[in-house]
Each structure stands twice: as C-alpha cells, then as structure tokens.
Length: 151
Image (cartoon, rainbow, N blue to C red; front, side, top):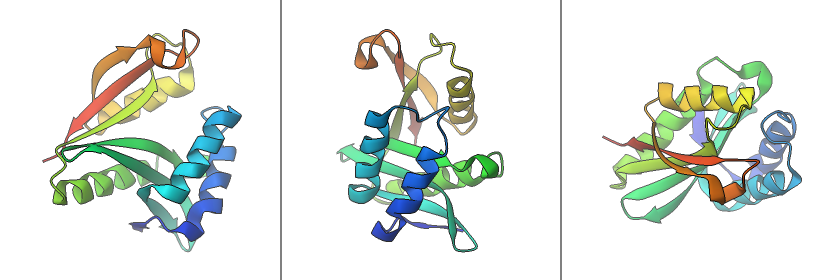
C-alpha cells in the first residue's frame, strides 16, 4: 500500500537508507535524506505496517518538482514498490498542475554498477536524461539530471 509520508515514518526511512550502503554510503547524504523525510512531502510503501520504501520531493516552480530521495529496502527490490511510489508521486503532483518531475543521480560516466541499475530503473519508468552536470558533485561523482513529463 502506498500512503503519504508522515513524521512518524522518519526513523523507518533512516533505517532503509542506512541499510543500502552501496547507494547511500556517505554520511552527508544520509543526513540530507534524514532532513528531507522530516521536512518534505512524499509517500511510503507500507507492507503490512512496515515501511519498505519511500520517496520525497521538493517543488522548484509551480510546474516543476524534483524527486529528492527514493529508496526501497534491499529485500523488497524488484517487487514494484519503487515504481508504485514514483507513479503515486507523479499523479499527486499532476493533480496540482505540476508538469515535470526531475531527479539527480550519478551519470553514466561513473562506472558504479549500483547507480547503473538506478539509471536503468528511472529510464524504465519514464524518465529521460536531460543534463550532465559534472561540476555538481565533483569529478569523482559525475551527476546528471533526468526528467519525466507528467500527463
């Protein structure tokens, strides 16, 4: 079941991030995610009362928002939770007149296999590469932005 993110979900979201060190191994990022789940809107995937995934977003303009964090517990990968979270977010934003959703991730210039899977996931659910931004996170973490049009 997908439902709105609540403050009471924050510790569960923190545990999910900490349980995915191949994606979220930097303390700075973990702290930024903890702040996001406590201050931004979003949704959680609830499986029998346990939070197994979450998504957060930040509006930038009335017609554009950014997906800031998305994570699903490792044992719940490839079960549709990530897609359901993003699709629910897109529908909710579309209801408010948002036309575009962006997300930042590592560029294909990085050989990180885990972020290769992340990019493939985003492209499979309708995101299109938009910009390469090597200066955003530095040469060791080349960034890119993907975009999805909301209908």
